[in-house]
Length: 367
Image (tube, rainbow, N blue to C red; front, side):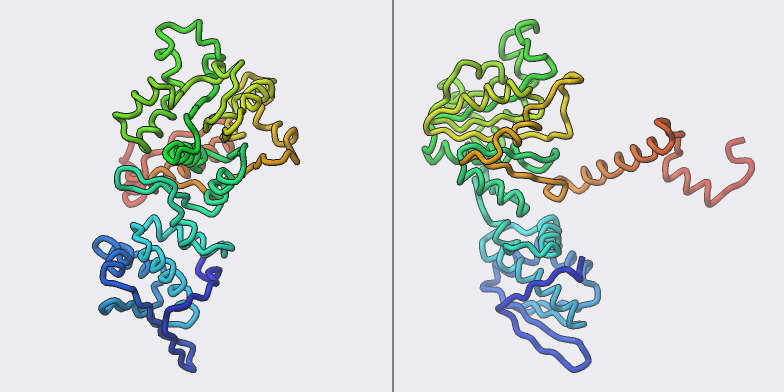
């Protein structure tokens, strides 16, 4: 990764000696910016030191000095300059943010990582909702600039969450009069009338993820009032039929589980002053065998249609808790071993037990 981080930043001093070592200094505008850049208990500084172990870092006042091999110093400087830019915009900097900066610097994206990570969509209960990768930023900008946007990518890429943040933002800015959230209740075959309970009882399990996102973005006490007034509507896709949706921000989630007919029905609900965002993951289709996914064919159908945009997100856009990523990786390895064993995988002792047996391979063990 280090060798691919190629930016050259400003606002620093450079001293280079003939032996190939150098020293750079980065000045922060205020003590508060310096404290924010170093992180709680210097956790950010520790991450930088671990990532670039061949450089020396020294903090004095509002200045961070970097010395060591010239190439390593330049790579470290590139990262520190991005951190300085985030600190100047009062962005909370964590080890996770540093990891995102390193990845984007390694990709040498057209935009500075700090520009991507400071595009605020919404502020809710003391935290900002913003894109965390370049693809996410492009997706958000597509929503700003197009009437119908498709966000396609794997779970964890933020496609639904960011769309809902844009919907809440549009409502708060009075760009629309209502938000409509929908998804196909594929597990019930959309035949909700055959399920027990009231309408809310029937649809709640399928729409609960959308409610959860709303609670992250709005005052929870205001949501029932807005729903009662029709300002926010959460309903299964079957309930969109026959309607024209004007002055609304409409989100169709889990769109990979629509048929081509359902997708056409949904898209033709678009009314004046409205915006539509369709999200889904074409690798997670739960439709009955032999049924085509409306999300898979719509890109061919709408190719070249003006004011329609398809935004692709991929595994590099997955933003999750580190432990969740480790769990996903472990399951991927397990699946690979199972496939190699013809669908069956032999029982393996826990790692701690395997280590003990390796250290004490006595014949009595297990006898």
